[in-house]
Image (cartoon, rainbow, N blue to C red; front, side, top):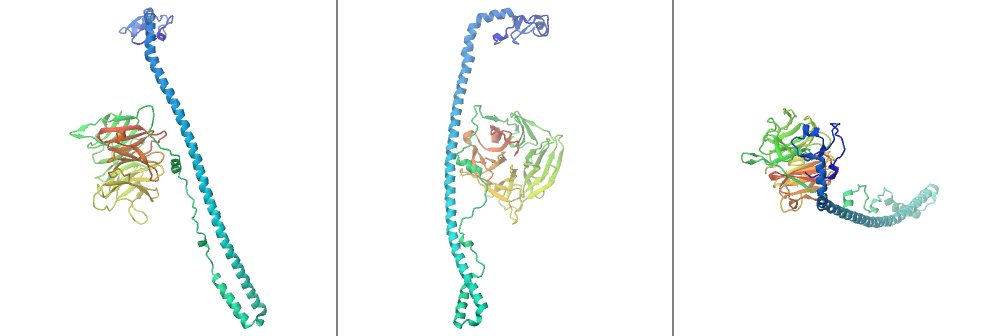
Length: 505
């Protein structure tokens, strides 16, 4: 056993046997002991007299010092040099980033000043032009008003003195004023662009600084975990849905297995109970109290199973088939429904979303807009964003998926149809982070999309370059992003700080 000089203890009494001197040394335990300790605890250990140990120490001290310098000290100094280099690089990078931000800030402020000055000058120019024209109208109307006053006064005071010629002239003057008597609309003179109140898009302003989000550049490596693939006959067990409970534990729904599986240490598949979900289960969530809620597509039911394994029906969805379930952002659960078990070429007659309480009571239904037009043909999965938007994976009839987003009030917000990657968008899973960004796994194209809350594509989080193949299920758990892929591989990645344990799908 390796030892150091701080292990050497002299002239010290044993704490347990107060009258015994610590004059022995156990090499196995690496500590000073007394003779009584040997008899009680260390008979089978490698022990010796402390004086012998000191003699060995004196005989090999110089040699030991050389080894320490060649190994521990050299390695520690090498790593210290690396850390100091990284500190300098980090300081330089920080200085460059801040300098760049300040320069961009000055350019943006200068551009904003130029734009605002130009708009102000245009407003002043338009004001002057319109004001001059209105002044012309004002003077003309004042002149006509005075003329009408004079004619009225003449008729009142000296009508018997007015000749026929004067009468004709005054009538002609009155007639010339008639076109100015009806109410006039001067709005057409204001041919300006209207300035409307609008919210500042901070994401777009941030992009003006040239900010590019990057994957975590930590010194520590990204953790990729291979989940063991158990077999049932010749079929591999593929994970459909994951619901993390801890950093190294998750519930999962497994293909071709009649139970949900508890993955512990991210390496072993453990069954929950024989009374668990049958193969009809395609989606489930786990509640804070440990209950699980899942949907049965063929039976058209939403069910709940308690920690005791008792199965209860929460709600029948007949005549629609439930295909997905997720937890609401604030309360309850969301269920997506199809009128036909899976997408087919025949146009659907149904398709809806249900917002249910955890006891199955209907809180709200989303199916048609105010014009009775259906929101989606085949809503297959749904999650609720932190801003309460409903994010729906919708199947199209041409073997393609799209993301359709509704507001909580049931108004259509936007749709996202992916990027030009050569293959049709195939959204296999969806979740949201605490900044209301939407994460989509695209199984067919082997990428994970990041979209903001307004439907703008931000970047690919993962692709084949990162070893991503056939991603099925993205999940945000605390400060990590879990992405389960086909063939039993699960990537667990650092995502960002302070990501809430919010949405699982």
